[in-house]
Length: 122
Length: 112
Image (cartoon, rainbow over all chains, first blue to last red; front, top):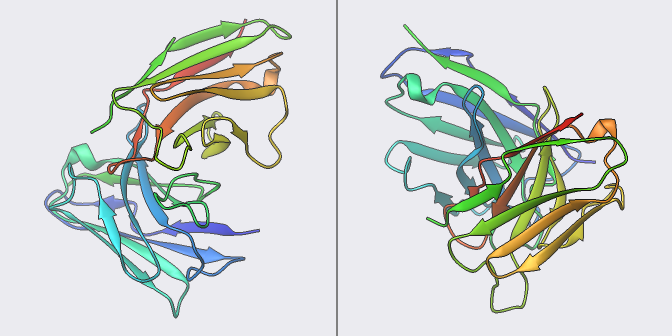
């Protein structure tokens, strides 16, 4: 059974860059799945950030597109999120998730990481 | 963006009673292949979301059969035939037919 584990700094300074990785175990990142990042501000709902395929194809939420980069490292079986020019509004729990295999749109998040809280503060 | 609107936003239910959550999308989620790209998730307190229903009406593996999804196009419903204490949490619908993927606001289910 695939497992996802987020890691990265829990505190980022305003105007800095948020960088997280999602390690995939129990499955290959080169499978026919899209891999997504989703975030949840404290006490609020879920927001999709973007997704990546093992080929490197990506799709991003237009609301974040100018600041977001998602990349994949097949040799390490992980994918990463970089979010630049962060503000307090980017404070959230960040989740990585796996979309269903063969699903053309990357939805059906059947596996999620446990989430990691990132606080933007000086 | 496709806007997802859930109702109600709060749902107190007695154990053993049924519950129903509505999710409406601003555009059709029915793709040309005949599938509705609509998922339902439950986020239990302190946990990550978990998949309940995909493609509008398909229960995910391990999900109890008291959960069912229905609907097509722009109107969808999640039903719980008999609510149990373990069903408390926030329920989200999500569309995955158009970028960006978007979630509903969430419906908080509590036990009376």
